[in-house]
Length: 325
Image 1: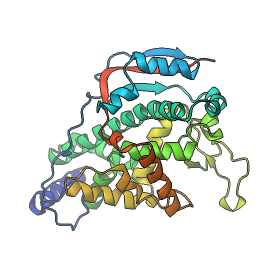
Image 2: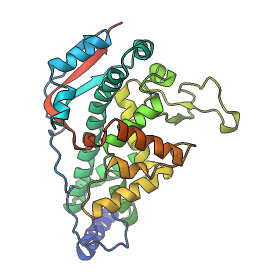
Image 3: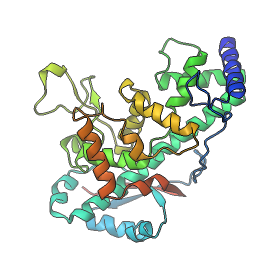
Image 4: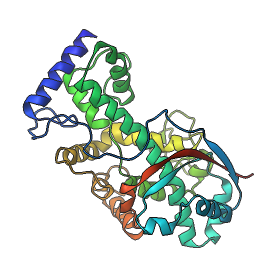
């Protein structure tokens, strides 16, 4: 691991001498030194959490009453309160698919966004913690950090499974990949890809983002396209896994390099990336290309999702929501 230590020292020297930020491609010329994120999100340290509690809820009326009891209401949101409870849904119930067509459209949207938003924020919280740790280890490296850095490099597909070290370019690439996705974008994509959580892939596989799977373990389309091979839509144990896999997908797949480059460019200017701007980079997420981007913008605009980028998690316990049988 001596090689990795030398690489980190070189990376840090280059960053300090040229003003590169950690998520900037080598060879650029920004004016800011390597620093942690300019934004300071509210939240708590991972691992410092109260014990979770579980609630069982039946109808969507029960869910709306539950939201009211914990102060998770549209009125508070409209008043500018951006605090979001830590809620984890055990699975997407078939009842949601059956009942949602008959419920008021606004109730359907409110329930969907309020159930998905906490998971998005919690997934981002994990990524943000990884990013903060990454920047700290680059700034203050010692040999004991090497194993963690290599494991992170493998997780974010910067190096392959056989690699034991990271070079200068790979470390720079890693800092561009380990970063959060604006909640407004994730909410819009979840609504679009899962048809508000009512798609067969959502019900059978807790899939919110339509990620493809070639392992044979996913949910098979009813009308598969032979020219695409033996594909399916990825299946997850719970919606939270789907959200975390989606973040990792955007942060690693070649098709979303434009998103990562745009995010890094905004970071260099000390501008927080917005969901609206990053949506412009997702023309390869769907075969609809530009029309897909228009759909995401329409969902964000009509449902006033941009303030979700200011949302933060409460510091109280996580509530596990178990849909009643």
